[in-house]
Length: 339
Length: 238
Ligand SMILES: [Zn+2]
Image (cartoon, rainbow over all chains, first blue to last red; front, top):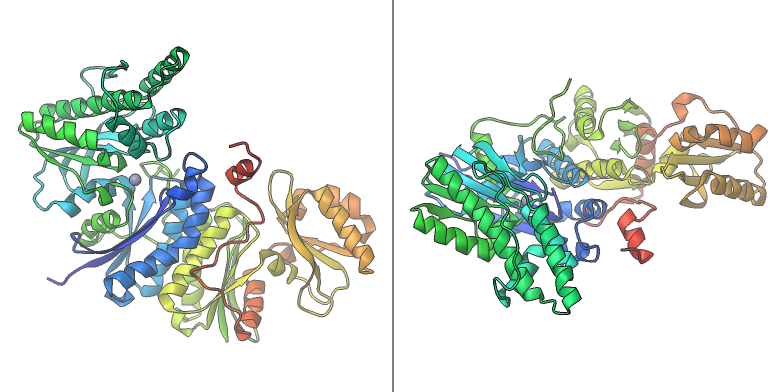
């Protein structure tokens, strides 16, 4: 069978990215232009600033992907782009560019759900994933548990009711005076901390569902932090260690319960927070105890990238699932129904 | 010379195919649909109905601002994609110059105004008496009152006593401007009041024949304004 090469474009948050992927598997180029250093001065991603960087960088990353792969434009079979969920102004840059680039080359356009992309990052890295599986998607924007019948067949069985896990990391890092993004900063601080020096709650909500809530943990962390300050013994390392443990234990425990309830043998982690070492370690330990196969993407594929978008699109390509020129971008997970 | 012109800087979306002598086709929409849904189908339609493809075109022109931040980026991303894939050069044109180009040969001062929200307008000051718009003063974002004061002042210095105000920034403060400029204001018919892709195409032909192209790897919109967060950071509020 002829090889299928797809150009992926991603601009849903603060990374402008382009990638070329063959047959949904082999990464031929993976260019990510990160804006982290720009948003650090604001303490978080500023949507308008992100959009401004995207329009400067979009042609640059696409050109770089072709140069890195040595391919020419005519070698590609389709253009894939994230059109939801994300920052709307940011998404529109990538989507508008992808549409016209595909149009000018007379290639089909494929719209990709960013979360599907994060999940697919696992399939880019591992060939023998057995389905059905339970997938924990954890990022700055999402915390969801999904039951996956197969690649592309998802059912959301639980979500966060308030903050996403990555958002909680960012907020806690911010008031403890750690940098942005919070995840890696809290992890670094936690490495030198001692567990149990402070006590934070593990918020499981109803024992029978797969919902999460992190705003309570965030508030409790803030209160403990202020108490420590009053006592004059603020220890950022101990606090970071306890906060990270409280969050990770809930994520892992709920994932294990979901795996048992749905009787699956495979567990996946996806999204930016899948890069967290404490989460990986505890999930590995518990998966081992429960005889589950655990997969997570390598670090470079956990954070936002376009390889996961081009990879996801391969399955749409083989199904002939193409997007029209009037397709729009949406901030939410789902495309709203028009009246 | 054949130029495809694209404009989505304001609530108007426009696409035109223009050559040295004439406008071949123009599509203009000023109706509440998002540019991200309408722009690319409009480009496709204009090209197809003229039995034209990107290969036939010499350059692609786009309005680079000022205007709605998101609208500008949709137009610019679209044109960057077309240019990168086709290898065609990109011509960038000021939205205000395009608007001013709706008027020609008048002795009045032509002032294109775009609604910048927050009680401000993006405004330009042009002399069109010899045909093409010549900038009298730099474009800026300011309150309608500041604009009116500046326009009247510039007119006094340049011996101009009539004004033509254009654009959705004029609509937004119409009563105020009519009162402020009174008899000095020349009324303009509605088909000339908003930016036209055909006007962008006509200016695009001139720039393209002069070899005045933009680097698609460097080009960014002319916003005339910082983002809210940058503004607050600059004032030490972040
Ligand atoms: Zn993401």
